[in-house]
Structures are given as C-alpha cells and as structure tokens.
Image (cartoon, rainbow, N blue to C red; front, top):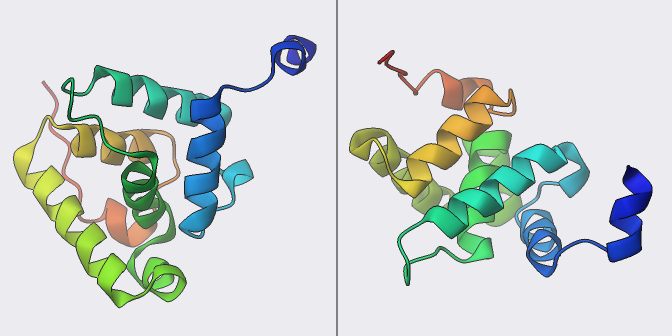
Length: 124
C-alpha cells in the first residue's frame, strides 16, 4: 500500500502542511498522516473563499500539540498570544474550523496536557 503513495507522490497540500508544521516547531513525523489528511479535508470543507492558509492552520495545530510555553519558545511570544486567542475563540464559538482542529488534536491524542485541561467536550 505504501508503494502506491510513492508511485504518485504526496499531494502539494500535504507537503505544504508539513512545511508549515516544521516552521511552527513541530516535526511532521510526529503528526500521523491520518490527522494531516483530516486537516486538509476540514480545510476544504471550510467556508469557500475563507479557507485558512497552511501557515495559520499549522500554527493552531502546533499550539495545541506543543502547549503554550513550548510554542512561545519556538515561535515567539506574539505568536503564542495570537494562537492562545484563537484557541479561546474556538472554545467559545463551538462549531468552527478552529474548534474542529482543536477537537482533532484532542481525539487523536496529540494535544498538550495544559491545553486539554482547558477544553470541555459536551456529549450530544
């Protein structure tokens, strides 16, 4: 099955997401391919014309995976503050692209413990 992927190569979107994650301080190998594919699918399902850039997507993912302190060390305090504000807005808003990214990291077991403590999940 893996030979099939090498025959056609990886998609440009997947490579761009890997590069964006690397730029935010997360080595792409730490994020399972299934999670990255789900992220790309969520991006395509986002509101047309407002699809977030790979960098913005990777920033929130990296923040959730690394946690506030490690993320700020890798990206600077300004980026940490922006990502924290996005996380708070996603938690408050509910069903948004950012909220789905946060839930994806939670359900995939990638979320940092201090981020997980801030998330409340309702059963519906």
